[in-house]
Image (tube, rainbow over all chains, first blue to last red):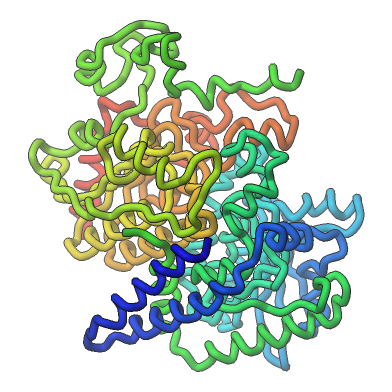
Length: 310
Length: 281
């Protein structure tokens, strides 16, 4: 099955190599990216492995945003409210310190027990949550704090009030805010990266993804019920749209995969946090010293280049 | 039993009736019948009750651009199949079929035009091409339209009609949200406005990206504009949906759009907007 895709990649590689454009720095990046993809082709995950990621990404003992924040950062100060209407507990935001330096944090938060799950709406934000995210991002920008976001949501909440309060517009404006920021930004998909609700806080300079996280345009169940007209075909749907980290890396959607302890992050949250902390520091290190305009320019160029068309 | 509470008429208002059951040009609101040329002459608005039928991209362009001014751009951009996607049928087959049945290369048509003498860029979606879904090709064409408008120093007028991101392109379809958002940012950096017109339906990923980033946003009467569709909301929440759930009129009331503009008045409205922005520069 990899045969044809591999051939296409090789064709593109050959075409790119034969072009000798002046100042082709983006071309070099593209070449490197394609070569990396080619390497990964041989170890492409199977449908069963993809489904295992779906299950692990949703595992009830998997570390959530605040589990990571308390282990990786110091001095966390949570900020509440969108300054307009409400405080949405499905998104946490605040300030903290990483290696002695103040940073801003935004992430979706799921609940551990029934009560907390309900109060956090299963990690599905309302527009108010995205507006809290936006105000925290703007605060970070104002004071030069690097921004770390943590994505873990089945999706933005599909409810009547959420629509009345402008869910679509809030997601669009959260993305637009991230595009404009003049501070280094690192997003990590730590669990479920569910569609628009996820990308709203993931338009970052570096996008990381935990080894067993998923990142997708629609839930496997949603896709199955639309295309197969049968939600129980979710496993088949997941195998078809490939939401796993390896495929996201191959498609250029993420920059790196954060390793998890053997068996998944839920087996050893401390070790999972240590590994994620290392990846966050490394990602931030690559961005430090880059001028604001250059950060914005590169961020836009990166997202503008995403997509495959003829 | 909860089925009965879903108002599917909202979602399916403009969907064609099954073949052999009812003529496609039957008004779903008042059941009047029309010939194609009659509807075409009335801009696909029912002369009896004002119901807005879906409008094809070419007809839309003809209805708002000055005659002979539209010059299509990026017409050669086509979708690929990055995931070798196969559900009940291969994605490539669905694409080929959409091309055949619509005569379009993709779900969006972009190009230069003038509206009552005001030079502008147009990006018009066509719901008939795979439900107006946004994949890589739609994202690329929309983004290039932003670039073209920025380079020429003119406004971009977009007309959206879309069920959302194109599932068959997986995560790359989701990435068209930030991609088009970046393109709008670049348009704004060039001090040019985006005027966003929402036709029925504009939902999901298109609503959650460029369509709601317009400097002026208007919708057609009765157009559904919601992030999640009524069926998904009903099934998830078990809430009874308001009769006007997600419709243009309720979005106006909640402050999400600037106006509900009937199709026969759209060109005049756009002319006024373009004039005001042009005079400020």
